[in-house]
Length: 93
Image (cartoon, rainbow, N blue to C red):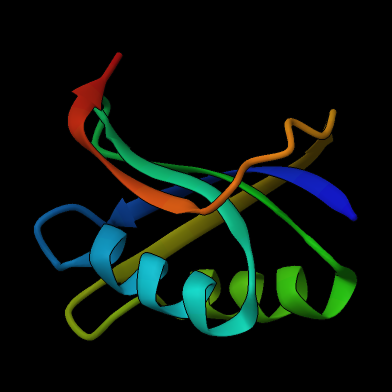
């Protein structure tokens, strides 16, 4: 199990990025959350095995239809033992 902090920049809000991310995460067995940030980016904390996380990262490079991903920044972090994958509704600073 690994924990990743993922920041995605570009045209990534208003294109169902969070909802599509949750669908992908649920399909591959990733746990964590996704949230829109005030600076227009999307932030994900994700935990899973290498295959699951690689699948999620592959999705993040493209995003859903309508998204224009300019950059994906990934940092490894400490495991937080999330129980599921959630879409955080509130925009975070």
